[in-house]
Image 1 (spheres, protein in one colour):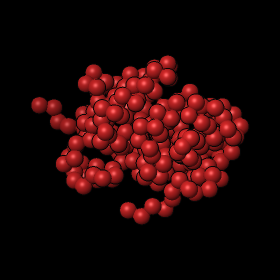
Image 2 (spheres, rainbow, N blue to C red):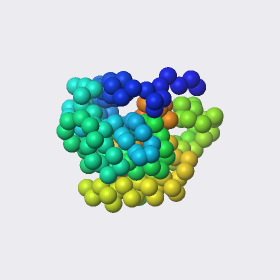
Image 3 (spheres, helix red, strand yellow):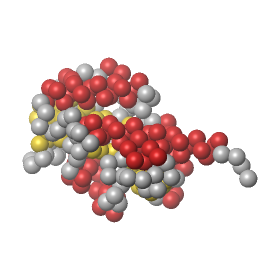
Length: 215
Ligand SMILES: [Zn+2]
């Protein structure tokens, strides 16, 4: 697949693309109010992320609403402070080496992460839309989304993220219980595609529970 964008794109251009992504996700009900956060990797070593500042309504995100932070969450550029969840983005950036990381709080990810938490994850298989996930060639693919318990102890949760990604090297994302979805991609376009595909599949998985005939 042709990549329209890579991590060498300009920082202002990436901030504009992230802001547009956030407004789009708000419009689609995946990042209502101040929920969700979005980042791109500006530099790998040492790590520098361009990430949403905390507490902003996603319906009105602008390029000025993004900060540059390092691996310790220190602000290197921009106004405001990063969300506590910035450390989860750092954990994903270190574990998967993506170009972009996106996090949504949709109804379906919130609901299914509660319902499947006892099993430690949610399996998605048999759907043509799975082929929208990078590297997946067939609807017979089984995508396992690990589910982590939610916590306000973000360093502990970041450690859980690292462990889950290490234990599930093929996973394209993970869920945080009663909270939402994280996914990533080689660049922002691919990460956006993964959000669209996974949100679609989560909605299907949720609806099929209530709409399948009972036996
Ligand atoms: Zn969140």
